[in-house]
Length: 230
Image 1 (spheres, rainbow, N blue to C red):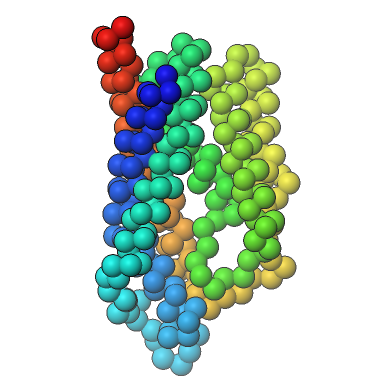
Image 2 (image 1 turned 120 degrees about the vertical axis):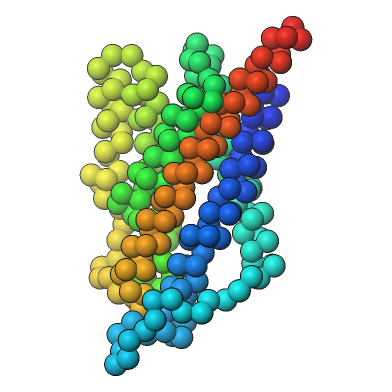
């Protein structure tokens, strides 16, 4: 079992990390670099002259971009271990794990780690006003845990009581409320902030879906190999 978890998580997570890095370079990083020009004062949102929506951005940086690929791979390998551990517990209860069901697991992981926290605390560009970092981290982790447990209760639980408790857990962090600053301010145009948030979430959805499929596929393949050698 441990070998199956290790193999599935490493392969699925590493492949997902590379895909995430490619999508971030193509869609997310240009928006982020554009926002940094406003944060640093090179561009000004409110001024007498119109500002180009497509300024010249910094080019390829081997150190910056190389570290981005490395950290992306490491982060998604970590995500994959969490995802595959959940699959392993479900498999012990007789739940079928393959590429098709892995897609559902991947979407659930995206909801828990990205969509649910972003519902009340969306991805932010540099330079915007924000609440205390520690408070946001505590709320973020609490939301991820509550959403993950809630989804598990809905998907794997039995009876209306489990489903109802799962729904309550998912809603609870948003009813409590995410920490926000007393006032909103920042040099970055709201159009760029909105584009960054939407692309970050879109990239996360695509990568988690692929990672779930890959994790389910590798899990099924390893299980078949163990059966053949038994």
